[in-house]
Image (cartoon, rainbow, N blue to C red; front, side):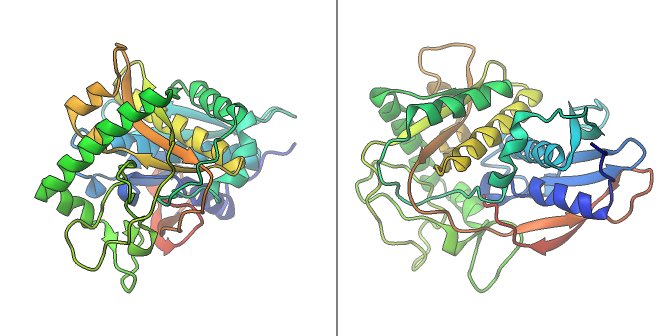
Length: 342
């Protein structure tokens, strides 16, 4: 098989997939550059889209960037390259989180995750109630295996464990709501319908609260009158999975982000909807409590999954290459709305 050219069209396809990744509050905290000499895409953190109160250590930002790196890998493999990833390749440049070199693929060799390419554009976060129909065990096992393949773990708790994790998430949501500064930070990333923006979450993509009070969905609107949707009844028995790693270093956060996206794409491929419950990770004591009695386990996210309506699209600031010289120049941004969502 002939290795494809790294031209502007190929770069558009690669970056379109990358920015379809989920990110906390749809901040899209990434920037991309191309080193044409080594055929490497440089993936950088954009600190201007950080969340100082919600994510002071930038852990969630690293998870978001890791998810974008995985989408780059999927798209590169689909287009015929062998993507070679280096995490944190330059200790002197802490904002350079990863490089993805577009290597020459061996004839007939294609990683199994390349089959997830069609799911990249179909994956949306759904903040709506699910039906309650259980996701079959073989799909859950495939999601667990997907995370493990990227060096992370997904724990699927039993009924009592699920109640405990949701209770801790509810406690975190209550703290966030009672903290005016944190509530204002979340609300600042909500966009009005008549003011579309390439970052943040459109008001139309927000979900309702659970009328029964069991499902701790994040309230982005706070006390602002007229913004809150009518409450609905969510699924009585939720299915959740806790994403964790055995260490808590920056490279572990990036691996966890890749594991997250791989598991989400597997779910999407099977028609399963997903949403993320991150609130407990924003309070150190509650994050520790999410581990339960087990030690050497650092949680990053609680994934809710099931069957139900598709999530609304959220905008993306996609990128196009400015140049293709031998330097690692940044990609210039333009507004677009691909099918991915926060």
